Image 1 (cartoon, rainbow, N blue to C red):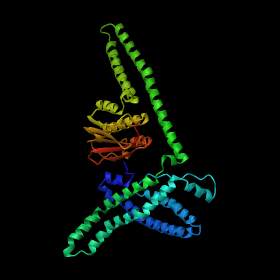
Image 2 (tube, rainbow, N blue to C red):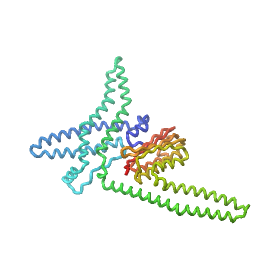
Image 3 (cartoon, rainbow, N blue to C red):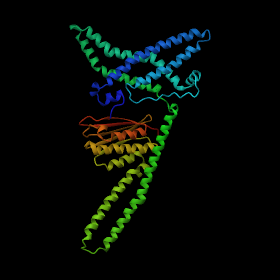
Amino acid sequence: MRPRTAWQAMAQRPLSFLTSSWPWRSLAYLATGVVVGAAAVAVFVTGLVAGLVLLVVLVGAAPLVGVVLSSITVAAVERRRLRLIDLDAMANPHRSVAEPGPRAWVSARLTEQVTWRELLFTLVSAAALWWLDLLVLAFSFGLPALTFASADRSSWPWAVFGAVVLLASPYTVTSWAGARAALARTFLAPRDGELGESLREVHASRARLIDSFDAERVRIERDLHDGAQQRLVALGMTLGLMRLDIPEGSPLTAQLTEAEHQLSVAHQELRGLIRGLNPPVLADHGLVAAVEDHAGRFPIPVTVDLRLPGRLPRQVETGVYFLINEAMTNIARHSGARNATVHGRYHSDLLVLEIRDDGLGGADPASGTGLTGLADRLTALDGRMRVSSPPGGPTLLHVEIPCHFG
């Protein structure tokens, strides 16, 4: 799976990460952070001083309002800069203004909560973040430059220390860039109530599709159980009656035996299909029991270590069950593994799953290993995943799904 963030790239491929574009993207993120932070300080100081000076003549409110609104520009620039180390675009949380004119725009922006979060982020960025960016860059590159410039025979240990710091700089820079980006997303990502109308409709439409697929799956399972399966049972009874009418030694006996065998195989396959469409153990006993039941019938040994504080919401429970099933199917088809493990825990409104196998590794979405299908299932659950699958194995699928227990 192609990494979506700098942190994912560093965690999935610690060595090949050095030759990728991610260290350079992280460096560009911090370097531009210094520039943007310094500019924000200049604008804030100028606006604040002008506002306080002019406040005595009752016109100081305009510069102060300008300081607040300038944070919108800073936040917009930050959202664009985040694309350097996080490929998932962040939606604009500001709502559209119904009335034309600058007065309506200013009034709308000042009444939005996101504007004040952006102001807080700009203050934090101006007061601390860009200084930390500068400090990390100075430590990673300035310190080695100083040690090299002052190196002589008596101070060669400092030169060695500078070389070590320089060699570690891609990881140092990327680690701070990832932490800074996570903090920026905390301030700037839209809350549920701030999503645009079109995005809310997308979420509602996706929820309707999931409900529709669930209902259709249940309908197909019921039709197969009440229709095709019952017809196979009736056909078996008919073949049994035919056997009673055939005299002993008839050449039709062998053909009838083969027909009964094929009917039995078809019946077993249909029962497996019905159980897979709507497993009763999932509805009756929950996700843990359903995964353990599926693992018990899996062609390779699977250790299930799944602990949950209760029953998940029905949609999430069903989605996670089929996600795990598809991941296990990929292991059986593509990995050549002898053992597999399903590990799951619930932490702070986040379901964390790790599915591991000791197979050949080299899992790649482009090679048709089924990872694309898993990504599609996760999109429906608002989840994310990381894959570590070096050639020779092992393969680790790390999944995070936001959810709440009722």
